[in-house]
Length: 267
Image 1: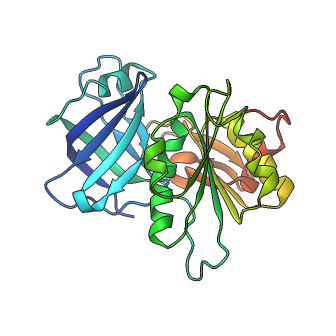
Image 2: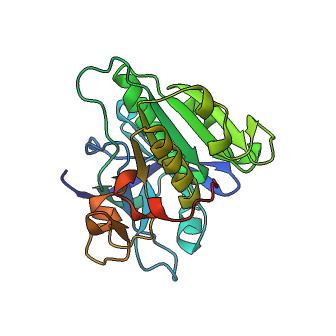
Image 3: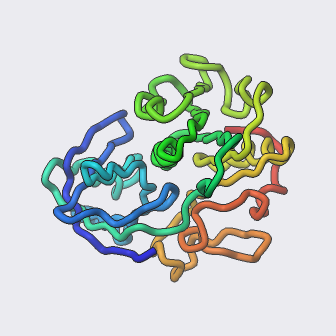
């Protein structure tokens, strides 16, 4: 897909959590086509310690209102500066980048996807769920967090499919990690697509392998250029070392060598 360098306008900046801000961006021209699982490289202005662009997953694309949503976790100087943006501010974005999740093509009878997310890793699953619903498919979301306060955008996810929840302290949904949810022992799915902390994705991938279910993971390796030039996001795969930003960020988990690493189930 063609890449675009655009100054987008902040339509709103909503603090959905003490550590997360939801930016709704727009432009005076129609936004470029984007697919679920792709990401944006954002230039951060006003931060003297932030020299490189920051990769942010595409959270949602509202075509009717010409909006791009970015869910930003404030984990460093750059993202904290982004959290200070307000309506009318401009944000320079390089987009869309990377390869997205697999989408059904053709007959969808019996197609039953499970979308598993944890923390800010839930972000790309919203647009994926919305795209699936447009194709007549109601996905199941399995979302995990430490506490009920850390669950993000549940009301938005509920627009597009069934939402199942785990929290580590049991304050909402089932207690434990996503891989402990009773759903996984009660139902089977045709495809699992996941994004979140690496230990969680490894646990989900092991479950998928044990049940013979195809699985895709959106990796969150450190990225700088977003174009495969700087090699800082390299991941070891069965096809050799690949750049997550260019060859991913979505990979079939059977291709990832971390499938053979630690057997401890975490999320």
